[in-house]
Structures are given as structure tokens and as C-alpha cells.
Length: 384
Ligand code: KIV
Ligand code: ZN
Image (tube, rainbow, N blue to C red):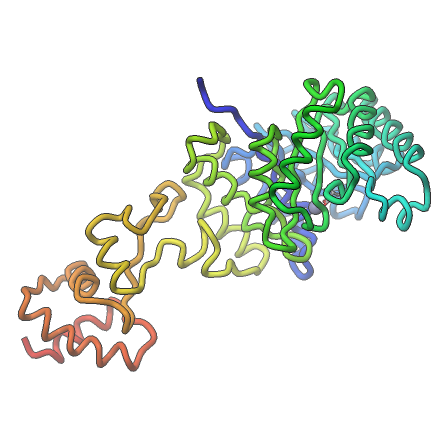
């Protein structure tokens, strides 16, 4: 049986762009949107059209540009938001309106000062109104992570009846544990009448570093869309990282899940977003960080030189990184030195290597890292 496809809903240009200091202009957003389309994401959340004239025009221009992906605009459960989003999306080949409202006790009481029944009424009205503009309507139950499952199921059932085709279950505050989030998706699959007419979507935040784990737990329990951003950027500690969920599904065949992403474009897309937003990717970031395929300790380098798979579970080429890096430091051994020396043109026999290694350690104690340009100096100092 073929693998089941989990749709990738990229929200780099909406939730991702909410990072303070990372605002993008329309020109930059268009470059990123085009790249996301090439990358193979299923849905691009292009912005929140009512939030500003700039966001409106970005959503409009992205709608004209994108050829394959669905283009989505965010709204609150407010008529005017929905009208403005529909207008911004009018040129999209596949438009989607993403509307919703808070469903947790905390949101109902403190944000809306209302009742559960009124929240359901507002949710139904918003979905029905959005449906009068576009066929594809996604509903988000904000703070679903902290919403009682029974009430959440009632909300989901009501909005499916009103025409929602995708149900977004956000862990808005990044509070859930993977088991709990997975169980929430399972509960909805089992208790919502009409759930077969809609796709459940995971939208997880990373406040406790669990966004990726929670999204995968959701997919294991039946969600077929994951909302994520390039490099995991987003509000506070960020959103689920696109590159992580994609590679987890690809590296674990037993999950029997996959995406339509061209993983070879992951690294360059990560760099593009990082450069455009002026937000560096942490070096130890999974999949796309500068050190994700770098080996610096002697034991690991020796293993990787003998066989890459001893210390790597992914082929760097699969994510668009040209090769595993053997970084020379004072912790490196002879195998790594011989390997890099050969690359820069020095084929060393055992005796020569011993001498060069002695010199290498002296250099390495003075410098954090030995570069290829240092190797000829070290060989010269060894007098071989
Ligand atoms: O985190 C969240 O709840 C959101 C919604 C607006 C979808 O971003
Ligand atoms: Zn969010």
C-alpha cells in the first residue's frame, strides 16, 4: 500500500512573519512564495489581509503569482475580515479562507466574555459566510490545545455542517505533550460526526520545544495536514519546523506517511528565508543548521570517513547540502586530518601523517578551527 500524504500548509509568511523585527515587504514575500511553490508545499498562508494595506497587497500579489499551491488568507470570525480576505484572494487559482475563534475556557471568558454556545454560533456564522465566497474554508479553534475535548468535538461537528473542509487544531500556547495532542486528534477522529468530510490539521507552537513532536503525534493519529514554517520561525519560540516534519516522515518508513515536498530544496529555502528576514539559523538546528552534517570529534570523524551512516541518519544530498563536513579541531584525529589533507592535495603516508599530526595539534590548540588554507602551512612546518 502506498504512503498516505500529509499536506504541508506553510505559514512562514503569516505566523512566521509575526516574529518581531522580521517584517518582509511584498517583493521579498513574492520571492519566498514562489520558492515555497517550487518546494512543493500544498498551501501557502500568504497573510492576514485585514491587518494592513501591505498585507492585503501581499496576499493579492501572491495569489496572482502562485501556480500550484492553494493560497490562503487568515481572518477572525468577523464579517469584514472575511470580505477583505475574499477580495485579496480573488486572483488565486485555489483560494482558501482560514477563519476561526478561540475555544478554550480562558479565551471564552477573558477574550470574548461570552459562553460556549455563543462561540459555536459565531464559528458557524463565520464558516458559512466564508463559504459564500470560496469553496475551501478552513476553521481554526484557537487554543484547541487547552480546550476540553468534548466541547472541541461539538465545535468541529458544527463547523463541518456549516461547510468547513479543514479543521485546524492549534496548540496555540505550545503547552500540550505529544501523547496528549495525539490523543486529542484521535478523540476528534472518533467522536465528531462527519469527520470523514474534513481534514484535521496540526498547528503547533514550540514554547516547550515540542512543536515537531506534537505535529507528528497528530499525524500518527489521523491528521492529514501540518501547519509549519521554514526554520520553525514564528511567535515566541516559533512554530513547527517544516524541514523537520518532512524529514521525519521521509526517514521513518514505518509511519507510512509522506509529503509532496522536494526535500533537495530544503537547505536553500532555509537560507533564503534566513537571509530575507535577517534571522540566523541556529547552527545546531535539525536538518538545516550549519552543524547538522558537520563532524568534529575524532571518533565520529573516523566513523563517518569509513561509512557515512555510522553517525548520519540522513544523506545530506537529500536536503540539498552538498557534503558532510569534516571539521578539523583539536578534538580531531589522524583519519580526519589525512582526509582533509588529501582533498587539498597532500597524500600522506603513515610516517608523514604522524609528523604532520604533531604540528596540527600545535596549530589546533591556538585556533578554534583549522581551515583548508591552514593545511599547507602545517605540512610545511612538519618538514616532511
Ligand atoms: O496559533 C494559533 O492559534 C494561530 C491561529 C490564528 C491559527 O496561529
Ligand atoms: Zn499560530
